[in-house]
Amino acid sequence: MKNTYIKGVSLTAFIFSASLAQAQGTGTLSNGFIVAMAVIILLLLVCAVIFVADSLLGIEAEKQGIDKGVNLGIVPKFSELFGKRPTFLPNGAPVTKLTKGYDIPLAGAPANRIVEVPAGTTYSVKPKDFVGMSPIPKTLKGEGEEILAGEVLMFDKKRPEIKYVAPVSGEIVSIIRGEKRSINEIVILADKEQKQHEFKAFELNDCKREDLVEYLLESGIWPFIRQRPFDTVADPKDLPRAIFVSTFDSAPLAPNLNLAVEGKEHYFQKGLDVLNLLTEGTVHLGLNAGGSEKPSTAFSEATGVQKNWFSGPHPSGNVGIQIHHTDPVTKGEVVWVMNTQDVIILGRLFVDRVFNSERLVAVSGAELKETYHVKAHQGANIENFVSNNLINDHVRYLSGDVLTGKKIEGNGHLGFFDDQVTVLQENDEYEMFGWLLGMTPRPTISSSYPKGLFEGIPLRAETNTHGEKRAFVVSGQYEKVLPMDVYPQYLFKSILFNDFEQMEGLGIYELVPEDVALCEFACTSKQDLQQILAKGLESLREQG
Image: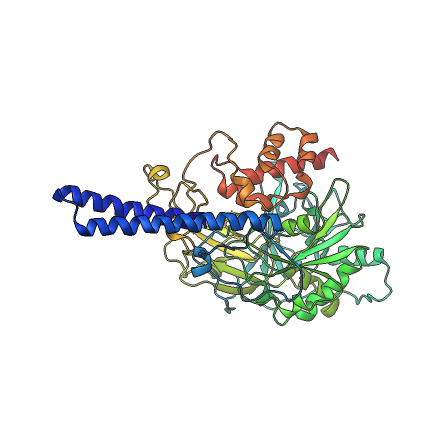
């Protein structure tokens, strides 16, 4: 609201200056100029009255405990006039309204449709997608050997009970190694006719929890369950205090999870039923109360769960943010999390008795001629999704979103947990005085850049960071985009000088790298905050 008044005052000041310059040029003060001055003074008085009234309303609203994000002012915000308005709010249900965060306005959002585009012929599993995994896991199949979809492919030597299975049937054509013979990727050439490893039926009624855990370990479903803190694959020996599932993704250009669950509602509910047997606590379901479409009935009418409604900008869809505002994690406690599409895979195991990793993948980015959703198995080759669909060929491909995604090649493979392909312009050109002039519109939260002129307008994303690493100074920017009761700047610095006690005191156990991705976007110092946080979590995890 304050920005609206500043713009109005700036405009009137510009008109006044122009009129004064014209009058000085003629040497006279015409009647028109006197009238213009009177109008300007009147406008300034009106703006001043509105500003004072709005400030008083804000003070009173704060005293009454009214949410700060609610606009009680006389003049509507720009986003209220031209922004995307929510069409659904839950009736009678409490809503956690998050005012901190930022929705980056990017062009190239995936169209709300599913296109029949076959994935490439190869699929892969990448051991480095799993936090804390041994760099050289034990592989049970070698190059040239055949494998069925759902058959065990490898296991972690540190935790051999957790099995990782093949996403498709076919021939293992390559085991790509990195430094010190670590395994970067296991590539499978898929069969034209898929062959599934069929699992025995499992009766959920009156089953023992340890038998269910063993069944999930052998079936390869277990790696989809992750735990907080540390974001590692869940420890089968732990009994989680609660399990959390977020049913919407607020990240830039993210897939539509309503579309993903369409026709699979029974699988999703079955998956929730299984999760309920894994905890003595509550299964929490995070739903979107401020989106542009009503949540799927698979989410809003799910049974056996506690539904928690959230509204606000990104990262409101992050499960870590939802945990913080529902039931925060403290030292010594463990909660588990699972992605919506992985819950569907879990439910499909108990309905169809097969490991079917098919999921909906968003193909997005302003560098594409067309954007859409496609169906693909986990670890799919993205080549067919993007080939012959590029506006220009000087691009970067990401497995994931622009904030947390990993760079891959144009014929690379999706990560284990990823359901999004993002294509960005590869901007490696130097922009002279770009940090000072700011002539090219770009996504930013900085007030020094005239973003108000194009607020809400989708902009083209590119890879240029527009600056190098600088002094790690306190700016207050992180707190504006992180809706959690932590002090991120001090936390990052405590990680850098390896102060374990201070890390714990500043709330590191509540965070994983994706939660601070927006902080990294906003960072004036250009610090790799996600890497810093990951380093801190790894240090604490190794300390036990």
